[in-house]
Amino acid sequence: MRVPEYPAENQVTVPDGALTQENVNTILAAVANRITANKYTLLKEMVKMGILRLVVENGKIETRLTFTTYGSTFYEKVATQYHRDSFQFKAKASTGAFVSLWCKASASTQYNSINISTTKETNRDITGSSVQIYGSVIINFKTDYQPLAA
Image (cartoon, rainbow, N blue to C red; front, side, top):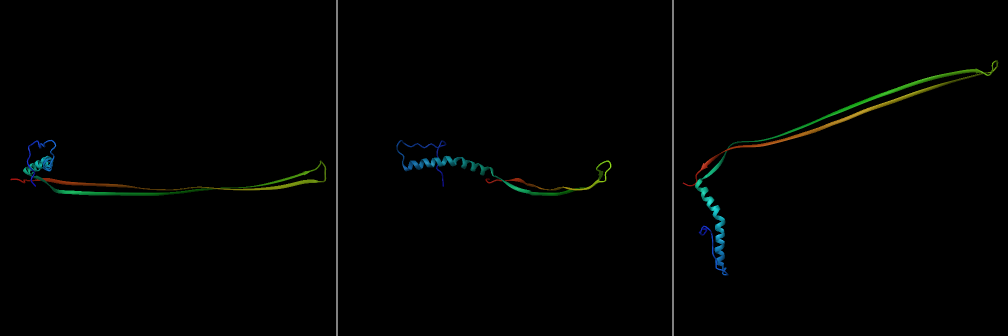
């Protein structure tokens, strides 16, 4: 499709009150010319200059995943026992008067036993993990000139 050529200002004059289909088409063609003018001119300049190709010489893609996990368990138990036995014997004798025929005697025993047990127990579990993710892309390229127009 050929775009009609218009003056550099792309001005179209239409008489007042006379907007016909032909005038609308003329206005649309002028708008299309103005929109495409810069792109078309740019494309013509690019063809004159040629193109630069990107040529990949070598490259490297690297990914790394480091996964670390650890764990420890600690268990401690301390038990103590205390035991004590006590035995006591008491005996008592007495008479009623200074010179008397009756006599009074008593005896008693006492036995105590104490047992105490204490326990301290510690149980500790520690676990953990860490993750490191690394990635890189390195591409080495050069440009290659290709002329399009002679």
